[in-house]
Each structure stands twice: as C-alpha cells, then as structure tokens.
Amino acid sequence: MSHTSTSVQPVQRATFDAVASGRRLEAVRAILKTLETATNAGQQHLMTKVLVLLRVEAPVVDRWVDDRQWNKIASGLDALAREAARLSPDAAAFSRQATMVADALSWS
Image (cartoon, rainbow, N blue to C red):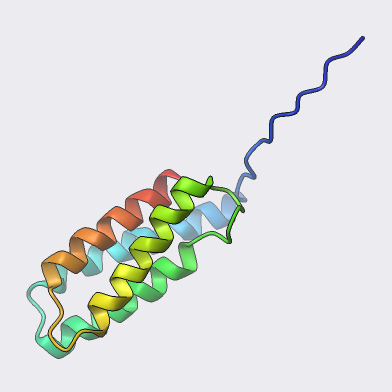
C-alpha cells in the first residue's frame, strides 16, 4: 500500500522570475537609500517608484505565500500607499515600511 502526501508544496518561481525579482528588490533598496536626501517632490516621485516596484513583486493571493505572509505584505503596501499620498510624507517611516515589505518579499 503506497502512502500519498496530502501536503501542498509551494509553487517555485522560475529562475528568470527570481533573477528579475532580485533586481527589482535591489532597485527598491537603492532608491530607499537616496530617499531622505531628495526634495519633497523628489521624495514623492521616488516613493511612487518604490510602490510600483513592490506591487509588481507582490504575489497573487495564495500564489506562493501563506495567508499570514500575504496579509503582512498587503497591509505593508497599503501603508506605503497612504504615506506616499500624504501632502508631506515621512520619508523615514516610508523607508522602514518599504524595507519590511521588500524583506518579506525576498524571503517568500
């Protein structure tokens, strides 16, 4: 009698996707390093770029992360969008939150 596993294995991203993903996350970290020295208009522009890159990286619900990890990523993206939309965004707070999201995405 054979035993079949009922556990669900996570879907692995293709190597090409993983390389592209790594490059996008590196770009996010590079942008974040320059965020605090940019002008207010420049900060908002850079925040928008970071938000777009992180949204591209965010998985479709239940694609390759569990519910807890997905909720962490989704709530982080929502917080980033709110901060970026503020009239006078807090660059340090945005950077901390974006780093947490990028870390969550790189560990996924």
